[in-house]
Amino acid sequence: MRAAQPRCRQQTLALRRQLLGSSCKLFFPNDPVKIVKAKGQYMYDEDGRQYLDCINNVAHVGHCHPDIVKAAHEQNQLLNTNSRYLHDNLVDYAERLSKTLPEKLCIFYFLNSGSEANDLALRLARQYTKHEDVIVLDHAYHGHLTSLIDISPYKFRNLEGQKEWVHVAPVPDTYRGLYREDHEDSVTAYADEVKNIIEHAHKKGRKIAAFFVESLPSVGGQIIPPAGYFQKVAEHVHKAGGVFIADEIQVGFGRVGKHFWAFQLQGEDFIPDIVTMGKPIGNGHPLACVATTKEIAEAFAATGVEYFNTFGGNPVSCAIGLAVLDVIEKEHLQAHATEVGNFLMKTLKEQQIKHPIIGDVRGCGLFIGVDLIKDKEERTPATAEAEDLITRLKEEYILLSTDGPGRNVLKFKPPMCFNMEDAKFVVETIDKILTDMEKECLNQ
Image (cartoon, rainbow, N blue to C red; front, side, top):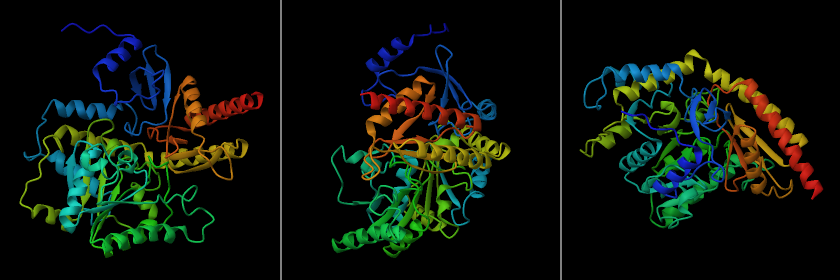
């Protein structure tokens, strides 16, 4: 077979615009980077220029990690088939995952994407509770399937709007939310918002199936819910006959450093009823999972309808999943995330003192948000400035992006091999660019 001739960036861009739907967005659409290879925390364009990847939480243990590549290659030479055949990789992987979770989360379903996992979690919750309604946080995003667009305010507010069975609670954001850092008890206040939603739904004859939440709201602006919030919400939801679903798709697998799962930041006394995982668990390979209790799994099985996923839990996917867990342990990536994340937070907070545009620096491990503002009093999102900053960072070969309702929060979710030198380089470059932006503003 004759190898295709390499295309220049503009040819690739023209073909993409011709062949792909216009709703399929690109990073930096006005001047996209054409990536041809990647290694560790670095990506390379067609001219060999190296970019530091600060946002790709899919390549969890590093792009093209040799151990992951080897595991996929070796298993592909032996067998790849569906999970109806008995195979060790499937049970080995489930057993390894079970050791990272609280004991009651002991039943697993394997899938191919976070969206599939969240859709199944919704089905499990509804079958177990016999209820329909779902409570989510404002600006949440849980996936691209129709069922998940319906519970993702980030998406449905631009479409047909909110369904009657969906209820939206305020994000527990103590920086720019309803109840801020000066509130005497923001935990109870935010949890009471959920309680009030439940009571209002009951008055209308509706019943709650689930509270569905990212353990750390990412699209919502890299939010760190105050400790104790999940416990209080779970109490209200369980009392209403619902279950608590923790979406760990963007934030799990050791990213927060001190814990393997982000929901564990709430304390040892909090255990969700269902946990979903995806993105990082396959390090770029399509792999996802739902973990739940025996009681919920038995209620799902009681329908008499078999659950089957053609590619979910196949031998190659499970070999890759096992290799990812091995690398996290072997390279001590949780401890690494804590060390580098603490340093990055510290140095970013030093920049906060120097640059008034930095309103807040928040995070845990290698999940960090930098909230850019126009003014200290109103905390108005500095949307245009944030966009300008990430564009200039790209010119310095740093790939970063924004999130939050105002698109003003810089989001750091790099591969877990992101190191101290990378952190220093990023912060020094942000400092330089913000200094230049401030000078330009004064000269206008």
